[in-house]
Image 1 (cartoon, helix red, strand yellow):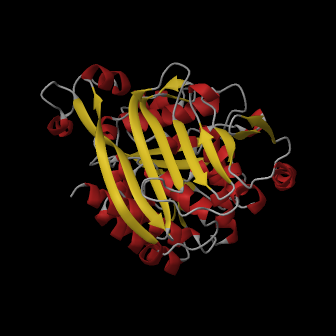
Image 2 (tube, one colour):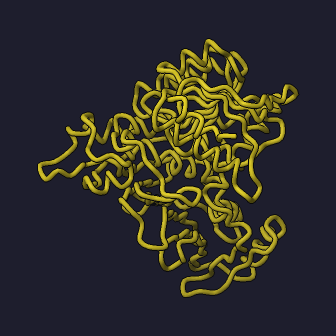
Amino acid sequence: MMTLPTLLLATSLLEVTAMHNRTDTSAPWRFITLDPGHFHAALVQKRMYPGVDPTVHVYAPAGDDLRLHLARIDGYNTRKADPTAWNEVVHADSDPLQRMLRDRNGNVVMLAGNNRKKSEYILRSVKAGYHVFADKPMAIDADGYRSLEKAFRIARRKGRLLYDIMTERYEIATILQRELSRLPEAFGTLQQGSPADPAITKESVHHFYKEVSGSPLQRPAWFYDVAQQGAGIVDVTTHLVDLVQWEAFPEQVIDYDRDVRILGARRWNTAVTLPQFAASTSLKAFPDYLTPNVDADGTLQVAANGQIDYTLRGIHARVSVIWNYRAEPGGGDTHFSVMRGSLSDLVIRQGRETGFIPRLYIERKPGLVESDLRRAFAILEKRYPGIAFADNAKGWEVTIPAVYHNGHEAHFAQVTEKYLGYLKSGAMPAWEVPNMLAKYRLTTSALALSLQ
């Protein structure tokens, strides 16, 4: 029996129906994958979930994006260790959204692909009565944000849940940074900071050429077009802005007009040569839509980097994203974060010096007493057995057992489980929707400022 990707190639990507009907009519949640163009769409299906029908209907134009998505799912289905059992029913169509809306083959739309289309996909899916589980960013410009506002209003009226995939909330070093910041004996109080020395700093470094699930990632060409993928300042920064809100004011409603003030925003380019572009996309030339961004030397200039300086309830914050072409040997995407308290600074470092594993440090300030820290830390040890702290030059390093470092790909299952829990209960926490809106209004407003 041929695998689904092989069958797709043999039929020139005409519509393919499942060879075996494995639909679970008792499962309350039936996923639809709409126009998958980003590998995150597949990572949601790296494992199975109770209550989710194993049959997933995929609507997409014929082409590499669809082929690569199905190949990833097939890889999960055929792996030796803990294989999945997804049954992908493919509807290859030049207008996948319209076809999906007509067919009505599920009740939860999964989105991870070309971000230029995402706001429309979200709005029309919610209008049609679907729940929507969307990869970031849900909006990449002011028009997209206005569509998103409308989508959330409609979702509330129809009783549908619209949620974005914030995987970084599940990174153990970030979780412990947040938990420690809530223990006054260890952290004191969050400082106000200043524009030059923010109280909260978060920097994320990403790479165009990388491996996913053990294989080199083939990027779609449009990933290099900020008109389709979105500039860095509205893409990866969504994670960072989310974490600032989630850590500094946990489970509290953020009102953008009252609580947020943008101080500055800027963006800059990453240079990508044609050989580098070819290695990551398997294309031999830049497509026409990228040629306006190719300089006189034949190098593609991608506005992938960005920084936003702002205040949140008077607390100074800085978020920045940097895109390099490829990580150094043994490395990968990295995260740097600082939360400044009156008794200590909580610092996450990830680089060569940490073995490219996120490590959390407690950097002491005058007034922090180790016995107080030990009492506070005992609370965390009950929640996270095995964690400890050890002396270092500036204070202490939080030692985290390897079992908690499950990796970025595993976080997709964790956030999917969280969303399924919300679907089961029929509601999300009261702060989630206003905070998503505040986040996307901030990033899209910062983009507009950076273009002035």
